[in-house]
Length: 530
Ligand code: GDP
Image (cartoon, rainbow, N blue to C red; front, side, top):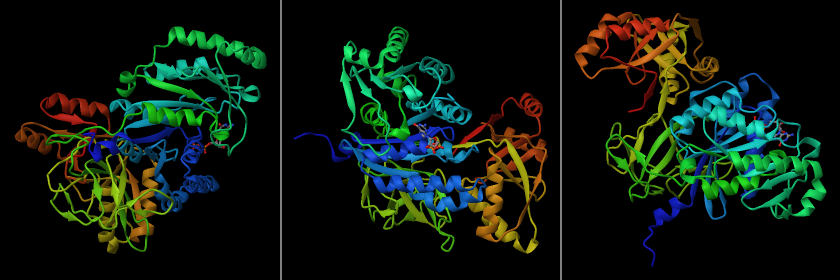
């Protein structure tokens, strides 16, 4: 009877989001609890296991071990209230990494976890910049109210200042630390009473209805007085929730709780279902792609190489952008027209990778391959499309790389080519000379690459310092001017993995001078895969 297509129906019930936070704010704990509500308990266990291994040692060799474990749980799918929720973990390491940014291009919303004691921290700020650049809607969860934390009003104030957008509290904490009494749910006009306990699921919590209910005042006396005073202030000062503004990334709903006690978590899950957007339309270079078009399209936003070192396999993570995926369907890579078989495509429903039969926009599928797929690749049923928006960041750190044993030069090249395609590091070939340059935005990337060259490609690489401090991709509408610029700056030009010319400088003044001499040339700090 209804004229809603099956694809439209599936799209409407999907929510794809990433959890972002500064390390130790409670991302892993919250993830586990979210999964508990959806009944996906074994994944929760694996999140814990992964976390345990992360804490076991602090050296980054752990990353190596984790890679195997984390892949299954870096994308998690669960069902809650008839919604299919895809939750993407962002890499948890302290060091800032490009991978995280790319994950954020694959989601429709973000859940920001803040430690109530520490407020908005550095890592969160950097991630927020990406969300803001893409107008990604953000839901905020302020964690750890079972501890002595900052005053909720000042936390709200800090969020508003750092995010540069109004924060609209949906719940408000009553007390904190040992005196944490619960949260008052403003839209539902009821108090949820706190009880410590880790494994509690829904249905067991106590609520007291009504803000004027004398029971609340009687039981929680000064704490309630304090909270009520705050709530009144907030109601006067904060704007009403405006869903359009939230969807445009211009307002964030805020929830308080304690992840470890599974308190305030369900409210967040409900908010995701009720407020976060379903997958939307996406921009390709050629045209606008509607999410409910019948034909499949998807984009590779992450590549995980050598998950099983014995097999040299890689999994390309693809976000489905339109249509439906059916196992066995033939897909084409728009970049080169090559065809791809999809019999062994995997989903991330549980710890083990499972073969997927069908999937819809917003879902993430994993395609095992041997180097056929690159970051940013668009897959379709045949039409040539290239989605935009997968960012590469201009590196801020540079090292030269050489092989210790010249007989291993070929292996070095292969390794760097693959690690470069995976996005683990950026590889530049200077126009002059034979030295290869590595570019990164976080120092850890160098260590990881050096280690992986050794373990996966048998190459002992020697890294050396350079004077370069910044890089800008250069373009110009007039190819002749660009050529002149490149010739004049030959000693400062290098080419990246897709042969895009890049200007290298050791000081921003050099960039400024070059820009003044060649006003027609554009310098880009971010290259979108195109
Ligand atoms: P992540 O690094 O953001 O994934 O943080 P985790 O989830 O691993 O949490 C970091 C630490 O904070 C762990 O020791 C958790 O047990 C603890 N933690 C998480 N949530 C809470 C909470 O609600 N209250 C308290 N007191 N501790 C918490």
